[in-house]
Image 1 (cartoon, rainbow, N blue to C red):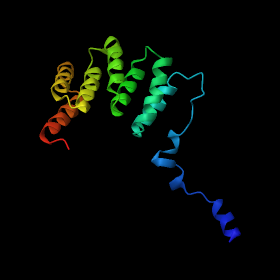
Image 2: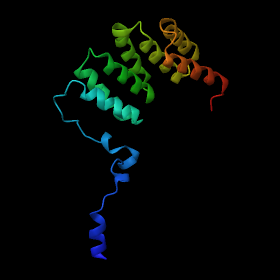
Image 3: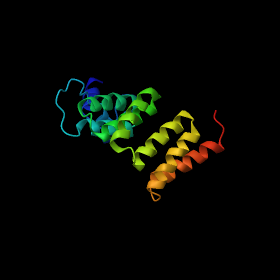
Image 4: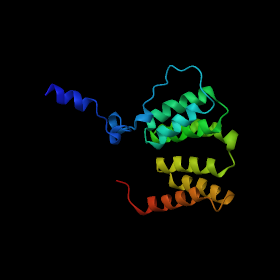
Length: 160
């Protein structure tokens, strides 16, 4: 029995190499909380990965650090605002959108993000206003088209 345990403990399955506790992928578990120096885009890349993996609390913490380290980086502020929206911290996302308005305020990216924020809050008229501003700036923007469709679907179905 002991021999079987030793043999099995030496085996690794490739299927489990990328899985970690709580459903996170293994690449999202690096702890960089004590790091004092960051490569140019390390925080942004890590925050993006956490957001993509739907670890919004983790991405919020990483982007919070990113805006402290790189206060003039719109990518850090966009990630921070989006992460704040996804965890329902609209007070924080509003502050982030105020910063973004000074940096990229008249762009489809800005209007799509702030519109999506208002969509999450249930403020559909304001969301539509921002999505239409994004559409006016770039009628071929696929994100804007998806957001307008999402908003249209939100109106069709009752909230539960």
